[in-house]
Image (tube, rainbow, N blue to C red):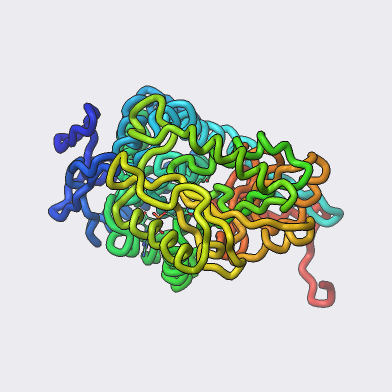
Length: 491
Ligand SMILES: NC(=O)c1ccc[n+]([C@@H]2O[C@H](COP(=O)([O-])OP(=O)(O)OC[C@H]3O[C@@H](n4cnc5c(N)ncnc54)[C@H](O)[C@@H]3O)[C@@H](O)[C@H]2O)c1
Ligand SMILES: O=C/C=C/C=C(\O)C(=O)O
């Protein structure tokens, strides 16, 4: 399909846009470097106003036929799309490992299977959404989930394949057509997704990819009045900008944003289990929105918990994400490294104590040691702001009430973790104000469940029915049960 190809770790991948079923090159490009060793991976197309316009027009042109199909008619296309992702599993793994620094093993065992499920699960779930009846004494209501139109999807660099398919799956299954703007620091797996869609025979224009920067390409896309929905995952400042741009056209937005989630360890917790899960918070070098990054530990067990977690952290294998044995890889970009270390420096200058880490790791320029800071006040910058790197904080508490107060004491409200005797931990978890919280566990995800944040962590929910509520125009077709005769004297 394409002639302009990059060779990234032996994988042929297009640096171009994918518009109306065709590859389209850009005169303007930007450089893409690997976070592992900073080598140049290639030049990626920067989408212009013309590219954004062409993608929206292609998506509009594809909409009537795609939206008229039933969910059952769309399902085979989407199942084939997932199969084509599966056929390219190895290439997806190598690309995201090289451009985003995600562990190859995590890609293979976690991300690629989840990306496939993101497509097939919603294609199946869409079958169950058609025509939900509501029967009252007066009327029969046919509640339809109609496709909304052209959906703009904007995703961040920490999980480009997983998050793009998480939105594409339900948006396409519902009968919308899509324009995806991938993250400019990790754009390659989204480009390969276009190859998978093409091979699956998705009709031209149903799924389009326009590469480019956020402030350039992304801003043009989300400001366009022809867009019916914007689904965004990323940072709070960008979300505020997007909400205003979309708001100017009264376009609904779904915003999945950052977090500063509490990791609560109650006095009756299984300390070793909690500590082992604690070390998992360094996964993806801490660049995970839903990680529990603020440890709140009962004062009576704090020393034992710190010793147990230190043990796990010291054994973490830090290195090249392409190696099977590696557990913690690099930080996405030199700018992000500076940002992460800046948080640590300011915290230490303000009196924080470094329990472990706190500096660069010698493996490479974009590596930072897993870090834990303590001796902090709730108002400290490091307690209040998302670092998005391998830097955690630890505070102690003396009572459940104090734990809950600290847990709720930031402007974020994405997730949480609570370790303790199950009934006790479940009770404390109920009072933590977040979109979700894991009791004695971490990261269990079910696509039927709602996912999203409160406060600064986001607006709206995706997942299960909630994805379809967002991506559909919900319509009530009212059919009276008794003959209806117009009359001004009657209501
Ligand atoms: N809640 C979640 O589900 C979730 C998941 C992953 C990441 N995140 C969050 O994402 C952030 C990290 O990602 P990031 O640094 O790439 O975020 P970011 O907000 O800088 O960028 C995200 C995406 O938005 C685009 N963008 C930037 N400015 C834009 C504009 N004006 N108009 C349109 N698009 C624009 C970028 O190009 C990128 O594709 C963290 O805050 C993290 O917590 C949240
Ligand atoms: O880093 C962010 C991870 C987000 C995860 C999801 O959106 C999900 O599991 O659906």
